[in-house]
Image (cartoon, rainbow, N blue to C red):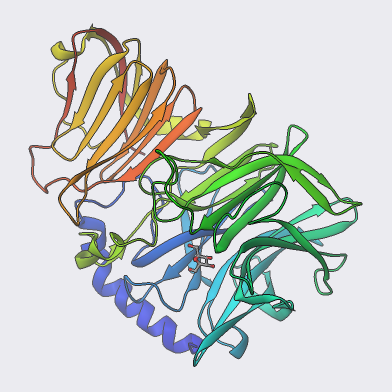
Length: 467
Ligand code: FRU
């Protein structure tokens, strides 16, 4: 637990001492969201309220390791420039002693309400409380305390409430592990946010036609898009399967129909949201324009995490760009939100044989490539994108092992959109039919360049990206 005043003092001292080093870091993103110092992971409490987008995030401000998390808080009017606030939630009470873990936000009586997990560890175990807090206009919060504790039949791994309103009830889904160590999503309903009725298991390993599907599901999110009920979740413990589930943990979705009367959910197969190396714990919100927007953590709690070269400069991890979700042909397409186009500067177009395109010295840029079924784009000697007929492969040099590793997507590639931001790359294929997001760390020198290879003509449009 923290004492608020003590944490503030440490935080301010750390900010005063470390901010310059963090901001000067060669790998620091120019326009992606990152914490001012320390470690950032899941996006939390995404909501668009009275013209402000709120993004809260899992934050360890005092170190670059996971630990007692607070909720960082940022707002934006346009999803491009963001304003920081003091942490919204700090673990100060017994029911959240080991961290204010992930959760979500909803508006009730014109006020943003935060729903999060109070993580409690004790000798030999852990438990969790789902807690409520009201956000005031100045960014401060009033904690209302726990409203749900671990139901019978589950371990202490019950967390990450995602809340929504349907007709006259609020509903919440929670990631959970049952006592047989199977990952589940359980759900509850309430009409006042304080008293919750347990509705049972909505989905999970061994349910709704799924076989064994992981020992724990984290960060569920349920929403309706084009009349379909879509459940996002992050299963842990899936075996690798020819090209699928290549990362340590997955983040994906099922599409289905939720029957609120029978409390049953029928859904299709699990599809991964992002096939890159670094993507986890995404969360969505419906904004005041009706768009469903997703932001993910461009990271994973895997063995590479503690080797990020940014740690020595006082920060680690960033978010993905905000993406609009579109349901098309039974798949979720993801597109960078329109607003990001304001970052585009110095448009250049080249129509040329790939081999003849001069290399580009750009570390923060957007590129769109059309035409060509066989070409390669190398980012110095750390990343290589290879388009080969009906397959695209993203290779990167792992900063821990120094070995090349790859991720790929099969399908016809008509259009490739690449967002680059110093140490991150997001590849959007065919207007978001597939996405691959990854971090990479090139040498800190002036020789970084983008090299195009191949004997075919490609149409390349690119911009530098800046405010
Ligand atoms: C996912 C997660 C959540 C948890 C949070 C803690 O990355 O493990 O399940 O609430 O991170 O920071």
